[in-house]
Image (cartoon, one colour):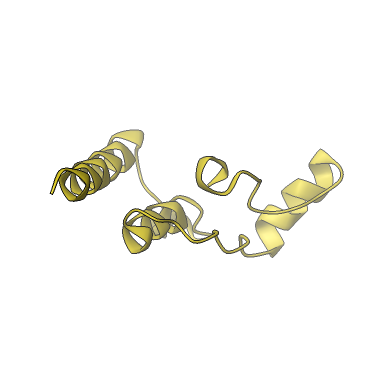
Length: 79
């Protein structure tokens, strides 16, 4: 999220406030992304899902989605 947005998904002054915001608030909307916005938003959204079963279950699973997105973006850039 921070790599795409340049900021944290939730706000807080202290670690305790940030922790509470993570549990309570939905992440701020990502700014418009130029390359495959729906695909990248889906990956970030799944990574930040509140319900554990909806999140990526492993780093490998997320890596596969990121690699798929990278290939799709590169194919568009080379077309």
